[in-house]
Length: 503
Ligand SMILES: [Zn+2]
Image 1: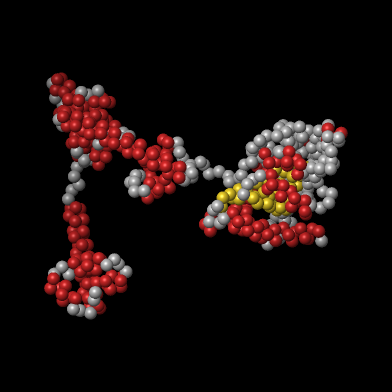
Image 2: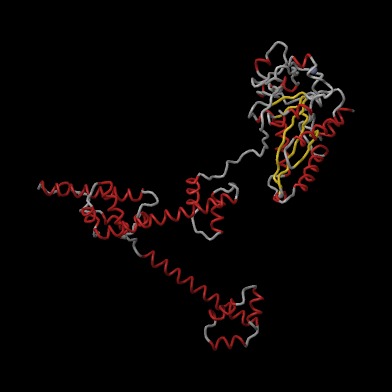
């Protein structure tokens, strides 16, 4: 049977059958004989030899283990480094001669010093010479030189005395010390080279790689280095990836004068007032802050605030009382997609979700336009947002005010009081840097990302256009199909719940 066909039959490379033939049929006459047989016969003959070969290997291995077991373990060579006769067991056996006693005492001190020196080598840092040898108990000259080094540097022995104690020539010690200096230099050079490569990997990964992935990257490039060294070098370079953080898009750019209060933040003092309701803004209120309306507490807040320690009234007793809005970003294969969502605090309904590749005013203007389309006549909802630049700009104020109302001619507006004729939506801003102040909208984004983005590799390759469709269908699902348990009794959808309300 031709070797090529055998290779194909067993799915191996063409050279493998040649190796098999040489290994199992080294004899030329045997080869010729086997070549004359049919496939099954050759297979059987080969497998017999493979099996015999394995048995022989196993027997050899077992024999090696048995032999080693019988032999006594060699003594730790380090013990034999220690100078002098060692501890004196029998006090009566000590010499009476004071000079001889002194001699023994000196030897004992030297033993202790050598022991300490060995420990110092073992406890030394990564560059300590001979450390591995000492640890393994190997009596190499490099290890001895290391102990001599510790004796001279830490215990004040002269090099000559230390070498005599340990039993190496001073020239041997100097040789190893020089060699070690070269090793240290080499290691430093190697670390510098690796640092350059690591910075390259960090750059390529846009600072997103941790040491494990950098290590894998270096290995893929053919560099042999341990993970631990990569981690240490990255720490030295100060290039750890940024800590995992919220994917929330931040729109804090450009301060303006439009800084309304946080109408949903309820302070204990205000809450305990005799009128029983009211909202307290934070101390950051700007020119618009003075004249904002008092907002009645929701039934939910009144009932649960004390027990749950609520600080914000993110609940509404009816639709169109309070709306929260925020922008988030989603990474797509060909760029970022920004979402602006408006959530009704009554039932969590996403009233409007608009999408764009840039987080600009058009994104939120379109959202307001969509809310306007379904907003009932005569309602003036609170619209709550973070303090991002988008929500403090004149453009935003223009979006949510009645253009027909001339605030310059209006005496209420001019007194900077809350003017019901001016606002189509009553703005309420979170406190600065207080993300919990907009929990309902962030909760919606979080749920969405958890349910359709996280842990789904197929999403990673989506383009912006595909992601738009994907999110549109999720929002449809979210309103019309997804069951929520927090809407009245049992599970129901937001759409059914609203329908039941208006019936
Ligand atoms: Zn007015």
